[in-house]
Image: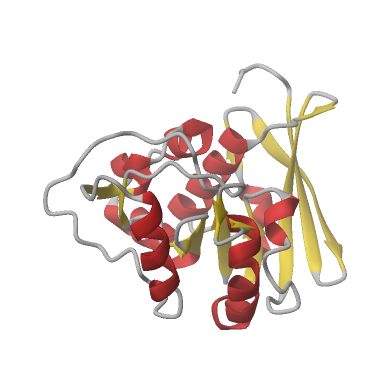
Length: 220
């Protein structure tokens, strides 16, 4: 089973959604910590789904709000979103407007250091028996115990001969394709979007690397 790690976005929209009720405290172990942070950093308690609250290239390309319910459910069940305020969230969780960063200080620590021991402690519970697919930077992977999952699946993207340095949009389109088409670990070569196609799938011990290449006909 895939388990996707999705990125936090400091780019957020001020909006309120009526009857937004999906709990942001999906992990009971994190609730007391997150409530302490809310008291410190949240001024406006109006709620909106995370996937509508967050801006930036990943979330705007994912467009979760227009996807069919079965696809949304797949992403909800197979993904966690990293958050300096909540630790880990589901992408459909209802959250308030609160722009903080991982470098924001709380009780003498940056939030990335505040959360590290708690996320590492819960790694086995949420990652065991999964193939971890990180759509976040390597800095944030260090929050987790990477011995917990069965392995790590990484995607690399190339436009002609040049590697894509900021693949946020590519990650979003990859996730959408996997969720919409029901791609499994045995048929990763099916993934394609715009003119990106899988060039190779390489097993490296427990881990895998999938390389997609574009002929450059479209600009993402």
